[in-house]
Image 1 (cartoon, rainbow, N blue to C red):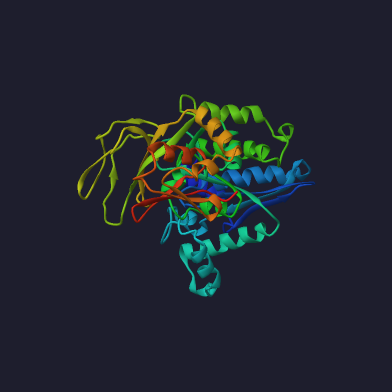
Image 2: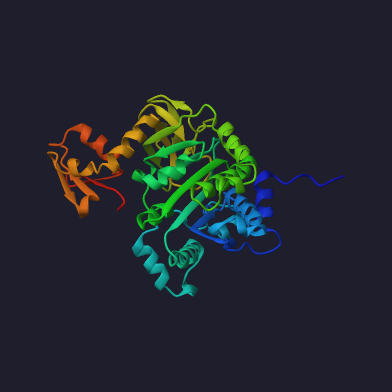
Length: 391
């Protein structure tokens, strides 16, 4: 009698780990032609091994035929210790606190004084820092979700990030960076690199590995690291993602994030999936204060069905792709120079930051700012501060 099959999550971890300690560098292949330096990161959360497994498989194929590659492709594992433990993290979320001051503190600390995610972050940032010395990077970060979900792509809304993200046949998420601080890709996008992340499906669903593999192959062509005729079964890769995304909106914008604090005893009601329609006032979870109701109507995104993590769920609304076209035209025309002279708007930092007095500026000004790439919003002494990434 054959042994029973390992559960999907355990099987993925075992295949990823093999008989050796899990390495930080999952693969490193330099091609025969000049081209971009592409950094693939997976398992930034330890209970999401599918991305790292997909990276290792793709890099094994690339290593067998490096002459196909333009530039360099490097695969990195994020939270090595948490992968081994099967947990999202050991002490804190590794995909938070990517701030210059925090990274400087970790880099200066004696290595023997660091442990858990502090040590993981120092090593990961140090490895990427060495790669930065060769020039601009393109970083693709691979994730999975605790609840059932079709694949989707998130990115800081620069035109180059958008170009690569839109090459993937899946829903594009706008505005996530506006309400989440300290994410790894936000830090590297601020440093001028291309930076996008993909959620390929539920943690335990083995289809997520194949979706991540397809994502990597398609992204490598979009970034110019591979020609389309050098990618095995590229049409099939695109079809796989398109079928997984069938019936889903092309573009959505984040409208609400429910933050889970320590001690909240947050419990998502069962059965929610990403992009499921939600009505305002609908009970979606419970915590120590009682029912948690949706504050507005929209679509569910990433309902939390795991014990760790500060994101309970998100609500999104559909945005017509037409507005992406409008946004691109406005940015190419430097429309922010006009916005900066509108009543109630004061420019700072070479137009990369605008302060808005809501008592003076009209409501449509905020929509225009979003179209021009000003995604981050902060309240500051009765005024709103919007920033975008420097061009």
